[in-house]
Structure formats: structure tokens, C-alpha cells
Length: 99
Image 1: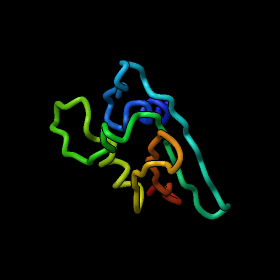
Image 2: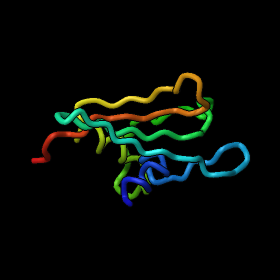
Image 3: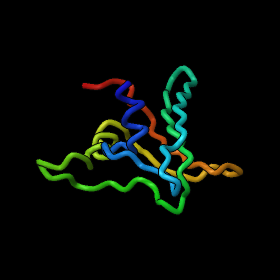
Image 4: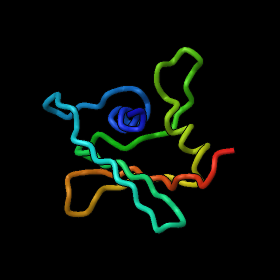
């Protein structure tokens, strides 16, 4: 459930709402070819609200650490608009092993 909450809050602990004050519809998609795993989170927030931006959180900030954690655990991540859909996708390949 932690992954779902982080996805719903944009990985920074703050819920994001659309122009009508509604929470977005979210999809969590896991893709694997048997050798690698890619994690994708899609939402229906308009691209005009912007995508996630890494930032440095202070010791007492309640948000701002999600993308720092993703960057530390994954070799890459990105955000893009889905062609033909009013949705954006944030993706990251999962690490093979945490050490």
C-alpha cells in the first residue's frame, strides 16, 4: 500500500488535485521481461500542472524526498505525457537487488 500512497501523492506526500478539486485516477503498472522490472504510475492530472521535480527537503519538511529516493534506488526515471490520453506517466526501472 505504501507504493500506492506514494503514487497518489506524487511521491512527495502531498495529494495533487485537478481543477475541480478531485483526486486523480491512478494506475500502477509493472512490466517485466523476466530479466528487468519497470514500474510505471499513470495519473489523469493535466500536464499543465507539471510533472514531478526533484528537490531537496529540509529535516522538518513533510514532503520532497520521494524522487530523491527513486534516484538513489534506480539508475533512471522519467515523466512523459501518454500520446492519445489525457494522462502522464512516471516510470523507473526497479533495481535488481538492494544492498
